[in-house]
Length: 324
Ligand code: HEC
Ligand code: HEC
Ligand code: HEC
Ligand code: HEC
Image (cartoon, rainbow, N blue to C red; front, side):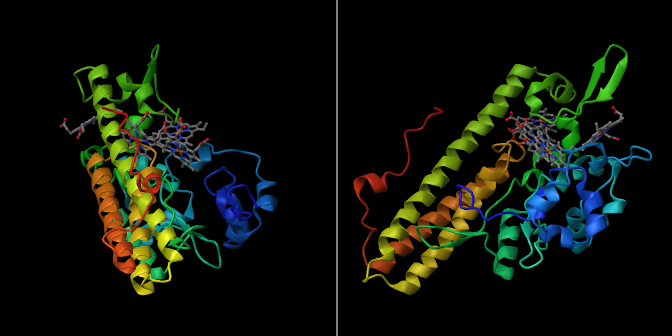
């Protein structure tokens, strides 16, 4: 058991961490996923590498992770028929996505059966009765979001304009008379001349300021959603041991808080602080705040009071804003 209380892991956790994984899956079949982490990790000496994205025979782009291929099949799409430009995104979507493990087999699966938006992924979790962890103080069964970078970028201004992840994260670099694709997976803000100025011609500084403007606004909303959720959690804990509380109403408040936290977590777990799709980030956070408020009101209703009674310290909603 680790400090965070996580149980010892299964081999499935290695799926995005080593270039030896695809061959190991061929060798072991689906038994790979639930094999003991330590045993399989001991056989892996390489980190992520060329063959994760390239076919060694001709260097063309390829999909090596079964979970993405299978998710496409379930959505009725043939991943072998997508355009070259889409492949420049889908190689990244092998790992930069939301996922879960099937209950008994621990098989890696993307929860996209109803679509890739956070609402659709949540509806899917509800349908299969899924939870990742139990909140220690409220006892609520929670769903954890994991880096939904691909899902967040969908419907954003750049994805809609036809850009791929590689367009910004792997721009062409010119060195002397050699032109090549950058393979430095990092923040595009470190190479804006190469990645952005093809389209944005008003200078790197102005554009960078625009990125930070967006990210600051999303961070503020993210914190507000976080504090709204923290407040409900405190109210739920206070109400839990109150003999006067209406248990059915408290259960409803728990369900609302589970959903509220999911929307906060979705934005929090994405790596871009809202840049890939500011509209979706802010609307997702607005749902989190709205649901948290509804949950808070439900706790009050369960207690038959106008507002749950919190101490002044507990009721403190959020720290002073830092960005303005
Ligand atoms: C995360 C995925 C990924 C990994 C890992 C990766 N590449 Fe690439 N590579 C790409 C993408 C995307 C392109 C752009 C291909 C295109 O548009 O046709 C590319 C292009 C290339 C090209 C084409 C020439 C060029 O510069 O434009 C070569 C050669 C190449 N990669 C070699 C490698 C080698 C060698 C490794 C390992 C050291 C590697 N790649 C690892 C994704 C990857
Ligand atoms: C095989 C799985 C895998 C694939 C495929 C993959 N990544 Fe990643 N990526 C990771 C992991 C794991 C990390 C976290 C590394 C760490 O924290 O040390 C990461 C980190 C990153 C980071 C953050 C690096 C930093 O500066 O901290 C960027 C940016 C990134 N990836 C972009 C991409 C892009 C763009 C693609 C597609 C061209 C891609 N990745 C494909 C697994 C993958
Ligand atoms: C229009 C350009 C653009 C496109 C297209 C794009 N990104 Fe990004 N990405 C960015 C910018 C800008 C940031 C914010 C970087 C920062 O805050 O330093 C970012 C941040 C990230 C990060 C976090 C990087 C870090 O240093 O922490 C990851 C991971 C990432 N993007 C993955 C992806 C994936 C996967 C795709 C495709 C599904 C994608 N991006 C498409 C521009 C882009
Ligand atoms: C292939 C062209 C293209 C590239 C490359 C590109 N963008 Fe864009 N970007 C667009 C389009 C199209 C829009 C929509 C608004 C417009 O028409 O200006 C946009 C909008 C934006 C916006 C405003 C979004 C908003 O709603 O506030 C920002 C910020 C931005 N891009 C940053 C970047 C950054 C940073 C990079 C490089 C990492 C980049 N873009 C690369 C085409 C591109």
